[in-house]
Length: 258
Image (cartoon, rainbow, N blue to C red; front, top):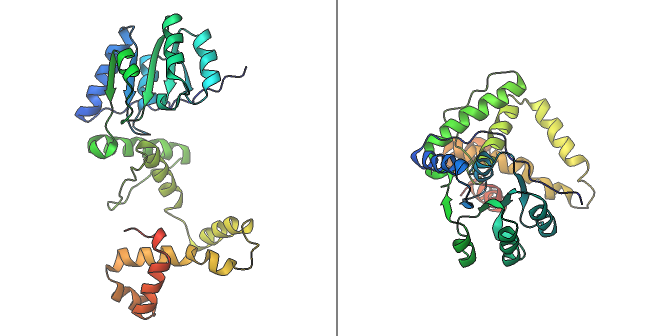
């Protein structure tokens, strides 16, 4: 059987804030203790990175791939189980771990609760989201800038008005900085080419003009509202009346910030 394993992020766990330093301290202690542990937290907070730090030679596998997970538990001494809450039968998994005397580090969402899990894992701790760790956000921004700058062979600068996208913590932040770095010097020709490539395979219905008009209107309105801070001023700058602008804002509301 081909075992589908999880690609563990090679990025070292950033520990600048007190919360992340405490998590790293616990993980460092676990490296020398042969005990099972559960690491909780939102997506992108570094759960898999810390689990891999604790057991660097262990196979990491998603709990939802139940049959493959059972196969790994039969053939390995150390296993990282990712997203434990999605496992099909936790009783069977725990029984197999006990039977084979395995060492397991598991990850789970922050709100995951299960009596059997609490009894089984002697140590569990939660990594807070990045929105609660601003010091780590700053450090990650610098790291991602350096990493992406190395790939692009240029120095990446971030505007002082840059607002980190933390909906998926480090995952969304890294993606945001990458996109920002790629498109910060985009000119009209590049932009037109990008939209052309996006639309080429999507056109074909009888209502495409209306269907894709938001690609122009939404960013125009969003940028205008942010820059001019007023619907009245924006309507004047765009050369439309205020009622027309309000209608367009309503039509594009799903693409605009609240």
